Structure formats: structure tokens, C-alpha cells
Amino acid sequence: MNILIKPIITEKATRDAEDKNSFVFVVANEANKIEIKDAVESAYGVSVTKVRTMNVRPDRKTKYTKTGVVTGKTSAVKKAIVQVAEGETIDFYNNI
Image (tube, rainbow, N blue to C red; front, side, top):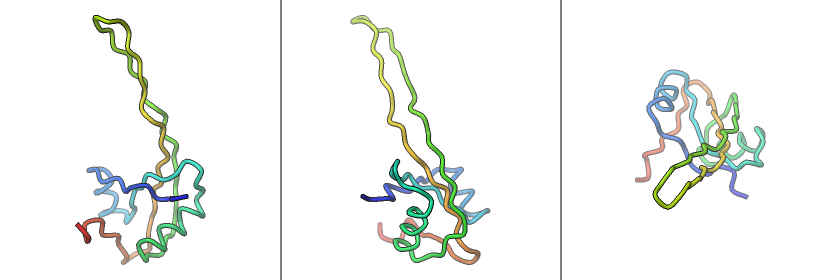
């Protein structure tokens, strides 16, 4: 099971990385905080001080078209906000 799926790189996540030294990841739905901490420490070589998680609900959409009502939804995801120790950072752009 792969714990870390992908990092989230948005304006808000970048601002938190600069100000609070915290980084946001999409993680597996079954992962707990201890597994997330171990995965980030082994993947990026940093020491993690705090992990906060949240389950994001799926967005539901309904469209009324000529052919009828079309409904759909996005996937539910789990996000983790990982705070690393002072003086350490994670560089997402080093291997592009």
C-alpha cells in the first residue's frame, strides 16, 4: 500500500509551506498519522513534528441536459498536513 499519493501544490499550501513550514499531501484513505509520518520521513529525509489529517467529502453535481438529468460526483480523498522541524524543508521541484 502506497501511503503518499501526491503532494498538493496550491497557493494556500505554498503559503503554509513558507510561513508555517507545513506541507500538504493526498494520502491513502486507510492511512493513519503514524504511517503518514513514517512515509514522509523516509521519502523526503526530514523529521516530522506534527501530522493533521482530514477527510474531504465528494462533490455531487447535477446537470439538466436535453437527454435528461445527468448526475455525478468526485472522489472522496484524505489529506494530510505535515509540519516538519524548523530549518528543514521539502523541495517538490528538485527532480523535474
